[in-house]
Length: 230
Image 1 (tube, rainbow, N blue to C red):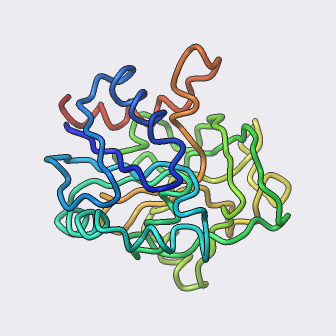
Image 2: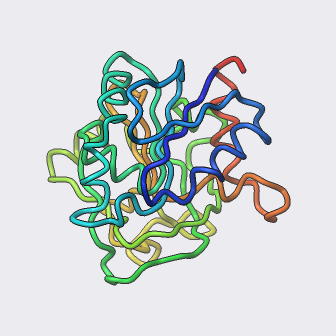
């Protein structure tokens, strides 16, 4: 499978993602620029973390109108795989490829820390190597990571098993105290109804190299590898 990693003005995790996909997982990777009009044959498109366009207005609100996003939206609508990490998740919500929005953390502070995530479903391309309720530790770094959706939207997500991860503690406890940003139902990541678009605030690419002392995030990339050919 060929991956495409997009760089927007202000992206700062694009090279990290390229390194993990290419050097650790062995995938073919093409670098995509925000002004491109061609995905260059990428079958799986990744929108990395960072501060696209300086996070002016709402995070991701300007990047959503980058020329490359026309191609990303069309790719997703045709069933192609798309994943957004942190700022990428925000962009996907702004583009309405994923439901809901990412709002300012309850604390109104930027949070940079290692957090625990409880796997809410193993029924997705990015979580099939994980057991339901399995706990992993992955870094976060965001100021607007509080997932919000209206009550009907949350019910739809929960009923359709579209929640990928929830914030928890080391023992898998999910409550207000383990919810670092105030996300509804502790939601840290979701997928769309067709299960081909994925978004999460934590950074699995920052926990995929043994040199970092934590490879819990590698499970997400191994999940992809389990179901696709290199």
